[in-house]
Image (cartoon, rainbow, N blue to C red; front, side, top):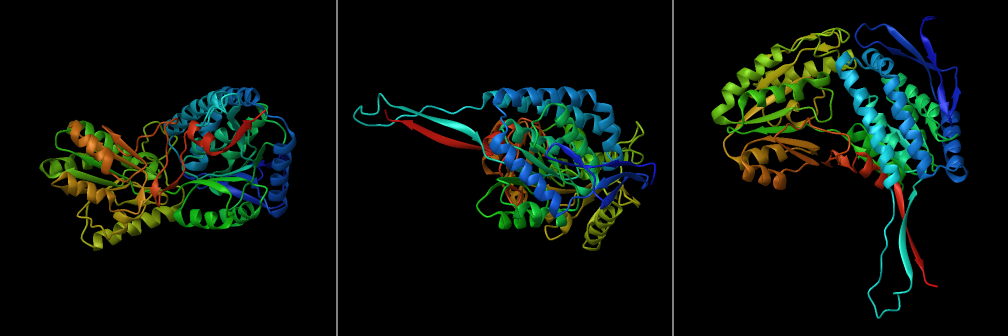
Length: 475
């Protein structure tokens, strides 16, 4: 333990060590990786107060925001190797996936910087007899206030940037609460923002368990806005606690893709295999349900099974590895139980269903039914259920038969079918010619139903984290 690096909290742009600490473990080796200071009530209040005072008294105009975020983008690029290696260790990501996440995040910071320069109000007028013709009427976009950014473990860099970059672009101080098991990357990003010139008081990072830190954040009325990615139950508790204060929530999914018989089969299989098993299935838009038109169903299952078997599972540092460990062995055990329940209910395992500690091999299931947890709930693991359909209406009904609605994909060459799908599928995004696993940083990303509300993507998040003030000058 003496060889582990110790990390402080960040409170109002200052590093603070605490006596209470937490060990972050390497997710593949199980060895201690870092020692993290833990926040308590005193530190949360100090961070909220620093953010509130900075919001009231420290200037941070649009040009300054642009400069800070552009500098942060540059620093992120320069520190790419270190950040990627951090994610391999504390999140269990493969090295290539971690490098990709850094590249996405560099772009996201740049996009947020550009949006900071585009944030503006509009002019408006009144219908009438001409009395208002000589009057001036317009709107201003103003920061909403301190933002609490509560981030998950599965994309510990990119999803943090998706929250804090738009918040800063809008002019708001940020209090980051990273996932307890991936705290190092969150602390390094806040350090990077300080190095990029974020004003004093505008950056805090509070580490600890969600159950300990979450209630302290939601109870603190100095915080004006909450951006949360996580479970439905926690999202509901946050919404209940914050009252009339605003929030945006991305609460997960059990995403689906429809594969039509007119689509190239090899391309469909390759796309679906990637979307089903990327990041060990720990992706909110992970492909969990595939509905395949019956004439190609059997061949699709056979090819997908072979594609799954070809995935290399193991050490995330090895260049040949496709799938690393899940975030914890208990999560792999949970996935194992859910698959066993499905098999007991009549499902057939075509490959996978093998576990070694936190590693779980990619698993293809058929014969699943809507009452099984692998179909109705969010597996958040490398498991995919493949089901046949005869008519498009049947496929739409099965996709929509879910309490979630984040992303849906449809693979078809028929433009009429594609356009119909965009109208009837109940999800925040419909991806035509791709799977539900598609996302780019600047798209409006968010769900319906129990998948949450509000949109990520810099332009859309900045709008949500801003206030519109009407100005009417009568004389």
